[in-house]
Amino acid sequence: MNSISHLLLDKLIASGMSESLATNLNMLSLLFIMLILLYLVDLILKKIIITTFNKISVNTQTNFDDLLVKNKAPRNIAHIIPILIADNLLSIIFLDFPSTAKFLSKGIEVFGVFLMLWIVRSLLNTFKDYFKTLPRLKDKPIDSYIQVFMIFSWAIGFMFSFVIITGTDPWKFFTALGAASAIILLMFKDTIMGFVASIQVATNDMVRIGDWITFEKFGADGDVIEINLVSVKVQNFDKTITTIPTYALISDSFKNWRGMEESEGRRIKRALIIKQESVKYLTADEVENLKKIQLVSTYLDKRQNDIEEYNSKNKVNKELQINGRNLTNMGVFRKYMETYVENHSAINKNMTIMVRQLAPTSQGIPIEIYAFSGDKIWKNYEYIMADIFDHLVAAVPYFDLQLFELPSNTTFK
Image 1 (tube, helix red, strand yellow):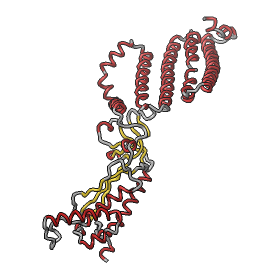
Image 2: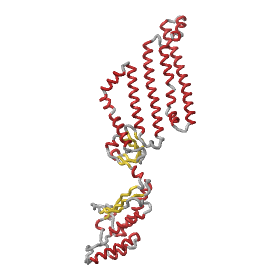
Image 3: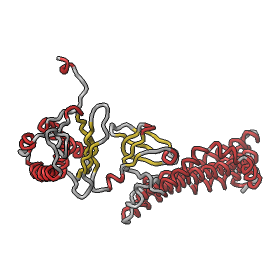
Image 4: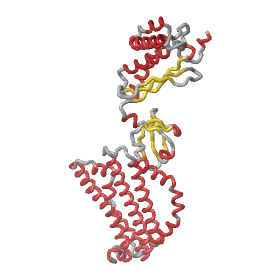
C-alpha cells in the first residue's frame, strides 16, 4: 500500500523538491489518476448496463423493463461500483492525510446513501408508471402510495446521513428521534392527513382518476387527472386546473358524477313556469279544439267520457264550471308533456319518466320534466334537452297558457 501511496514521492524528493511539497503533489497526482479511473469505469459500466437493459427490453413482452430505462434506473445503478472503488482508494491516496481521508470517506458514504435513494426513486417511479398501465390500477391513487414510500425513504436516508456525519450511535439517535416524534408529527401533519385520506379514498372508492367531480367549495368542476399524497388535480371544463387538498375529499362534501356515467342514462330535470292567471277550466268547445292535437286526443276522449259519466251520475249542476269534475288547460298540457317525453326517441324508456307539478312560487306554477336521456355525452345531452324544451315552449300557447317571464322594455311598449 505504501508503494502505491508514495508512487511519485521518492522521485519528487530526489528531484530536489521539499518533502512537504512532494507529499502534496504526490497526493494530487494520485487523486487525478483516481478521478480519471472512476470516470472511465463509470462510463464503461453505464454503457454495458444500459445496452444490456435495452436488449432485454426489446426482447420481452412486458413494458416494465422499458420503464426502468425511461426512469434511468440502469444509469443510477452503474454509479455503485465507482463509489465502492473510490471508497477503497481513499485510504491509499490520502495515507499521509488521515483527517482528510476520514472526512472524504464520510462524504462518499453520504453520497452512497443519496445514490441509493436515487435508485429507489427510479424504481418507485417505474412501478408507478407500470401500475398506471394496468387496467385494474390505472384509476387508483398510485401517486399517493409511491410518495409515501419515497418520503419514508428520504427520511431514513437523512437519518443515516446524519449518523454518518456526526458519528452518533444509531440507537441513541433513534431514541432521541422518538422523543421528538410530536414535533415531527406536527411538521408532517398535512402529509399524514393526506396519506390517511388517500387510503380512505381508495378503500371506499370515492374518487378515481378520470372521474368527473363537482366541488363547489374549491370551484372545481371537471375530470380528476391526478391524485397524490397532498392534493387532487381537477381539470375543469374550461381547461383550467384546480388543486384540492386530498383530505378535503373526506372532510367536505362533493359530487361525483361516476354513477351517472355508469348508468343507462343522464338525468333531465327542468321545469316550465306557468303563469297562475292563465290556468282555467276548459269548456266543451275548447276540449273539442284540443282533440286536434294527436298526442292528447285519445286521452281527452277517455277523460271527457269519465268526467261526463261522473257528473251525470252525481247530478252535478254545471251552470258553474267549478262544480263537479272538469278538465283544465294545465292538466291537459301536463299530460301532453308526459306523452311527448315518453315518445321522444332520445329518452331512455327503461328509466323513470315523469312530469310533475311543483309547489307554486312567486313566479308561477312549475311543471317539471324528470327523465333520462339515453345519450350521456355532454354535447348530445344538451342538444336533446334543448330539443324537448324548444318544442314544449312553442306548444304552450296552444293550451291557452302563458309562461312566466320578467318584464322587458318591449313589455312596456
